[in-house]
Length: 486
Image 1 (tube, rainbow, N blue to C red):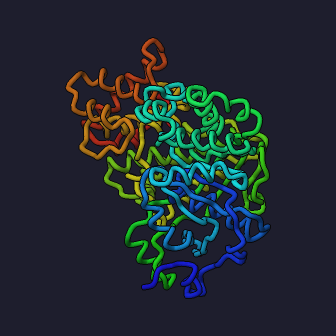
Image 2: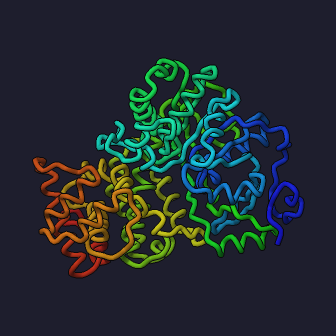
Image 3: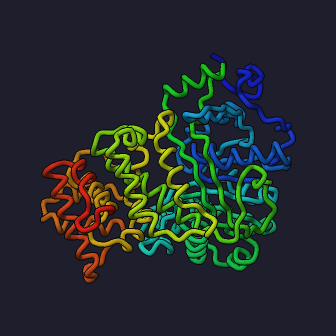
């Protein structure tokens, strides 16, 4: 079967929606760090729609920070790929043309720097995952003990971390005219771009302090909230999509129809007509971030860790069991939603119902193991603040007990930036209470003198013992003492 490219796209099935703009007229206007599946299903699609509806010079230069796999998928296809979205109500396949090229930073550092310095690049977006920001324990400062940051600060010209690569490119931009720039984080962190600005300033203060006045005056960091469930595309799904397309697409995306992007309207440059593509520009994105991070992402993480303990492969598998679906509903209504403060016109109940339907989508094979990656980072962002608003026993604390049990008492593979620490605790023979306290420090919970946390820790230890004695299922269905709805 022939492979998708500019030369072969005319052979695509008539069922595939095609861009109606002239790709040959596009110039790069956006550089994206972390050009994985989520970016290609989200920001690149918004940009593609904006180009179709409003035009403009907004081609995307993608940058992979480590692997060359995405470059091998996209560059032979001239940047073209397809996005197939489906749920129980229907399906759609579209060809996306907004990505022009993918560079691999370790192999093409000079080219990455040159594009960052290019005035036609007016926007840099990022999807580098939570761990890519190299945040310290406070969630705002740079982790100066991070091995990659230590190495980058010693040799900033050969930086490999996202923060170091971005700083090196900004230095080049400053040296080549200091054109203004907007940098937009699209990762699941509250106040994501504000946190990025803080760690980037700290890095620049150490390595290139003379460009800080320009950064403060001419570079904007609008925060954004992004939402679309994008599972990793399996080999079988690639084959299925090839049959649908009539061409082989090595970069094919399978996702859900739902998509949302809410962006703080504080740019230093012009932007694509993302609003015409469905993005919302708002004065304050924080309430939307909190609702998504502490409802959707918090629930997702709970499903992932509990699902792994229950040998559920996907989110839909978990939700297909009535008792487990009820647990998710109770978790949302009793623990997660009461802790949120949202705008008066935001229907939180409708949002939660919508989330449950999305989780139940049987065509979206979103594997628990994929969501469970980087657990120590994600739990810090998704659960800890809500846990501190809840009484000693809560369903969210039971989910935390599940994660603790998964880490300490199973042989389930851990894909986590703190993997070494977690495996050491798994092998440790110290008393359980001591190991639990050390494990909680990995997610930034270290409150030995806090009576509320002492109560939670005692409940956590009891829940852990309950899992060890009778399994996770009974713990999830048992009402919390004195709180029948909790």
